[in-house]
Image (cartoon, rainbow, N blue to C red; front, side):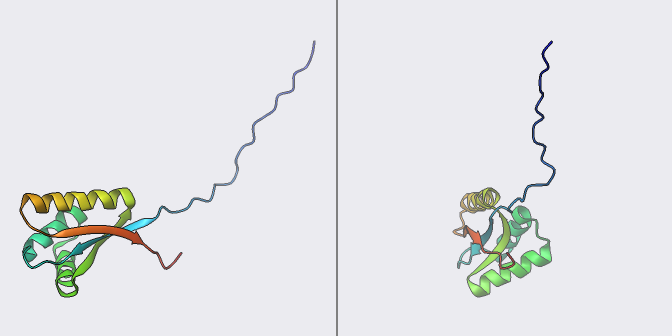
Length: 107
């Protein structure tokens, strides 16, 4: 009878170091035609802001020409931009929205 040697696979005992995915900020731009209450409604509906924070963001956008609506992973940011722009087109407003990589200063 021959003996067989069984080789056990290496078992990972430490958690692998995972990197956080790059985050993207969704930016909304001011225009002269889109009503302020519509912008607030967009911020509440698509970015889950409450009325007060949505109003503050809308005023920032109005006074500074643009503002950050939220920070998300790329696929979610891209989806939110598409949803906002589709809603604006449906209502015939020229509001523009985009996303760009968020450079986290803590990392």
